[in-house]
Image (cartoon, rainbow, N blue to C red; front, side):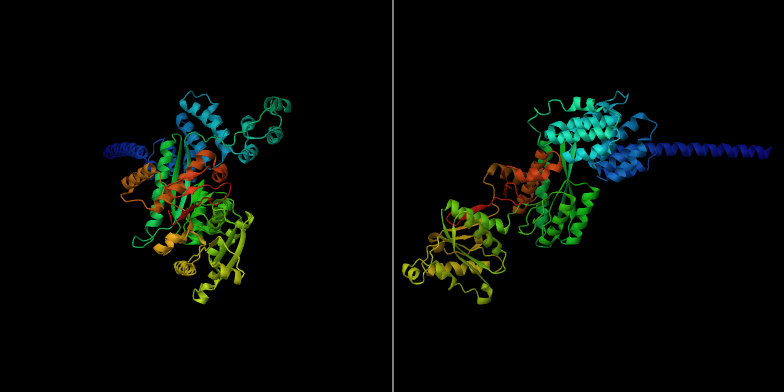
Length: 573
């Protein structure tokens, strides 16, 4: 009897403890979910995800998935959303399907996204989610590129969605291409629709269609992920502020885009290139595969930039180099765009200025053997001759080997009639001297002193290093000296002042030229995205954009991959 009473007392105590534990656990779980929702609503998605995973609430898998989706961790998001889509609660299941549709859309799994949305849109629910799904479904159909349409058609399992896909393609394709797509629909749908039914519905008035939509519209809520790959330096490094200020300028450009676009946003994802080509390649691959970036800005240095250009071509992701001006960087690459004109472009534009603006027809060239300026010299020669001018002298020497002695080479630019006749000199209207490197200042000084000593009246043409030429006051007055320049500060004081005020307020420091370059590069990219709608058309939009007047650069690609615009400056200004 006592043993029975003892057993009963034990069981009562055990049950009491069990109920207490269950109550505490339920209370803790509820508290955990509530805290997680606060974090989620405050956009602290990483902390929210961790708390959701520790919660037993039926909604925890759904909101964990939505948190990882906001963190652009798409594979983890999809795993949790799939779990939530198996919920017995219909509202949780439907919201999970809608979030899965978003995740698969970002990953360009358009077939999966459309199938989830079609299921929601054609279901019995009467919630706002049904109309949202229908709207998103239609927006995707009007967003896909032509290549996407063909690829998605073959992946879809539903004949109804296949039919919708092809029908939505008509405004974006020419008549013959659309007819091919319709024929593929007939083959893939089998017995679901008759050929006569498809052709009667889709091919009517096909020949009368004259205007195609060049660029599609993005769905509402579209987020463009933009990679930024720049090196980070120690604060004591003299180059520390260059990538920092470039990035600060990009952040302000992203803010501008997000303010003027209610239904689309850009998301900058920064990675450290670490001044190393292998590191640059690794972070770019990570951004391309896991973050599904739509474009990348960077890096700074030529070797990592060349490696990135190769990967940009492989992944077909546009790369915008803000500072690089190497002539070989975008050779044979269709997805690499240089904001800073190349050495070759400096020579080409100066030749156009000399022939077309200054009306000169006889031009001399002096360049140092093996220098970067040689690329400018060759481009100048080619463009000047193409425009009908004559190259009187092309002088290319290793001036370092002769101690930078210009006395002999400058004789041909004399203005003395007696010397011209006796030496049979072909008189030149101008001399193009694209000096580069550490000795460029010395070479400019010696050239100008020799020309002055000969009392030459030849016009001097150069590239942007001439901005720092050590000309005397007499030389500035007597000689016409013109040089190319890739960037100047925008004279539009209102936009420049607004940028400066915004920059100082945001970052607590004054902007420099790198801040403006970062702003211009990102701003041009984002405006190209606004035009393209679908990033598949971004390269086309970048190439064919109208002239963009930035704070530092004036950008105009004119169908090419290198910025074609250069400023021509003069010491007389």
